[in-house]
Length: 287
Image 1: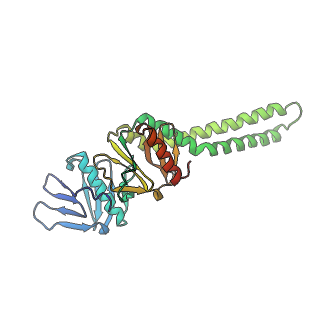
Image 2: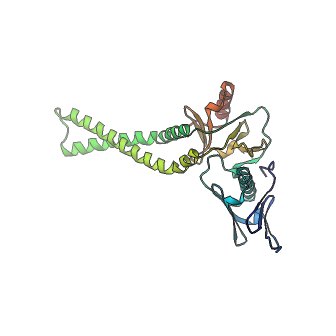
Image 3: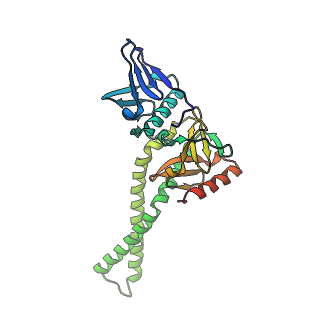
C-alpha cells in the first residue's frame, strides 16, 4: 500500500470510543464490549469530506467527526491511510472536491533522489486565471464551429428572406458575419457560467487552502501532497493522466478531462522548469 510512511491513527470521542485507522479499521467501545475489527477488503465504502471521514462496513456507518482529530496532520494521515487501503482493495472512495490528487491514486514507489522536488503554497489569483485559460482551451474549437455555423445559418436565412443581388450582398454578408460573432459571444458566456458552476467548488477550496504542498516530478510519475504527511515513497504513475496544458503561471495535469495536478511555475527555478517541461513532453501529449 502507499503511505506506509504514516503510522496508524487513533481517534477517540467524548464517550471513550476509539476509532483506529491502520492496516485494518477498528472501533473499540469504551464499555469493554468486543471491538469491531474489519479488513479493508470487507469495507463497503469510504466517504471523505473536508474534515470528516465516514466508513461504511457490515451494515454500520461510522463517522469520525472533525472534533475527534487532534490536529490537521492527524486528519490528513487518517485520510491518506483510509483512501490508500480502500483503493488497494477495490473499495469505492468518495472524496469532496480535491485540490490535490486523490490519495487513492497513489502507489508505493521510492521516488529517486534526482527527481524534481519543490514545495510551497498556492495562489488563488493563479488558480483563477489558470481555470479561465483551461476553459478557453476546452471551448476554442467549439466556439469556432458555432461561429461558422451561425454565419452560414444567417446567410441561408437572409437568402430565403430577401435574396442576394448586386445592391445588398455586401450588407447581408456583414450581417451574417455579426450574427456568427453574436452566436460565439452568447455561447461563450453560457459556457463561462457553466464553467464557473462546475469549478465553484475548486475555487472555494483554494480560497481557504493554507497547506504547504510538496511536489515531486520524475520520469515514472508525480506527487503533490501536503508537506505534513509527505513521503518520498508515494507516487502517482503517469498512466493515471490524460494530458496536460501549460498556462503563464501553472502546469496543469488533466485526468478524465478534469484538473488532477497544479504545479505553480513560481516554485520552480530555471533548471527545474526546463526539466519539468521535458518530463511532461516525454510522458504526455500537450493540450
